[in-house]
Image 1 (cartoon, rainbow, N blue to C red):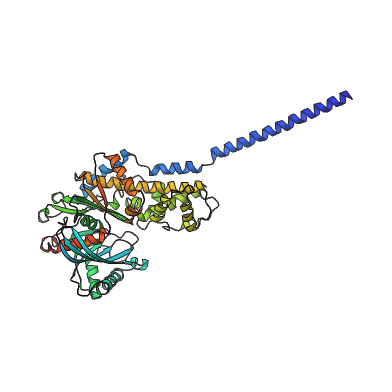
Image 2: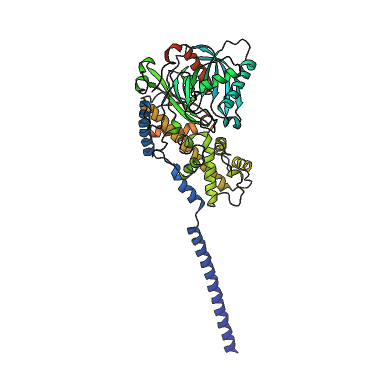
Length: 493
């Protein structure tokens, strides 16, 4: 019996050992599988961090861009065909601040068209301003020259005859046209190409002032277009009316561009620079900076956005910094991460597959959320069809938005500093108009930090210039009315 009991104990002991060994093997196997999966399956943070590096810009990279910007400016002022900066003469200098009278302004800057009546009191003071805003239907944006400009003329007639007091003495009009034009006089300019979603046929290569004037004639609007104005030129002019230290104007909104005050003698593509006074405002058209050249640092997302855009290969700098594209960049990043199972797992992204359904306001609001659980972002996501999200996903989305907008502010600051350093005005005022600059919570602060990081001696004053594109057109109409005999007939090479 003792031998039998002993054999039973040995069997029980062996069974326990076998069970223990099997348990250990299971644990080891599970651990091995966990670490194998962890090491072979891409991790969400790692995927994003790798992509994020393509959006970061070092000081040395920015300095190289500034040097390239200077070279492109010189080529553009000389009229060289190889420049990516058009450097278009505006045929107007800065305001004296003493212009007086009432003037009409038309501001075509994007999807909205505005009409204004502006009273100038002189001594740098702007008096009463009346204005109306009209939305331009997409169908008109993509129609024909006559359809688009007839629509504009109809709204001007509505404003001029129905919205302001009868008998108002204002017959001269400044036309802010915020698209690339080859301006050949103060009131003549040929459209180079459409941007911002406009595709109206029969307009490229045509004089946009003549198109508007013809539409006025068809609609019996008795106004004379005395000045064609780029919105950046109008912004600079608005600030300079009360601030003679303003040398640069910038638009940071749906689109982006800049202008500055240049010595007329440096504009060598003018047939005769002696007829225009000492200084003239130059419309840079910086949205095309670097097009076709190895200057900018593109991420895979930028390449895809450009490929899908209306004008591939064009306005690539603008596509990295302007409000029209920031939401789209964020959308493409999210889809890229979702494809790699790095964000929004098991969630319908139907709305997110629609191009340009995110705007810059979404980016700004995402960055504004400072709550511990990012509840405002959760609400924003719900509005886009994503009802459930984790805190980690909301944090990742916020980081994506911050990364995209930070690059935009960094590149904007770089370009402003490039212009200021080129003309030796590191202590001037910079007039900036546009919703991206005014409504994004950190855009201005980041720009200032970038400028200080690149050049600690720079003391540029970034000044929000509200409604600069509208008021500036009226001021330029006033300036041109006092200099009608001077510049309007002189051509450019």
